[in-house]
Amino acid sequence: LSLPSPLSPMSMSAWFRQASPRFWAWTTKSRPHWTTDPVEGVICCTVFAITGTSSVQLVRPALKSVTGIEGNMVDGPWSYRITSLVSVTPIYATVLTVLGTLAGRHVFFAGMAQKIVGRLCPPLKKQMCEPATLKRAADAAKAAGEKAA
Image (cartoon, rainbow, N blue to C red; front, side, top):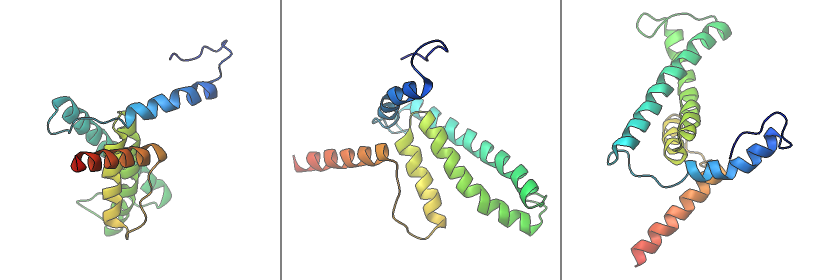
């Protein structure tokens, strides 16, 4: 699957529609656990590192421009500390899901993001995208079939 050239009859939207099922199949496929496979461990650590740095770098200028609050976690003020913690968490979860999906590990990182947000919010009905929902249902059916056998 190659990108369409500007002169080809296939538009970018047609290319995305064609590539989308293949991408979701790739990013939701079963992978070894990150503790048993060194490659998975490196990918997971890299995604977490990039996510942490990116989310803080996104929030700091936003706090300054939106609220006018400047400071840091060590020297304060308290309004900066509290606002920073409250705003970094949802942005971190969102960036984690996006980068994890782009790294081909959507199910794992979407689950991690749900845990992060779930610890701060009251229990809500879990919302997952369709590919992750289908993947979880298939994995649960497979596990139930293996237990029965």
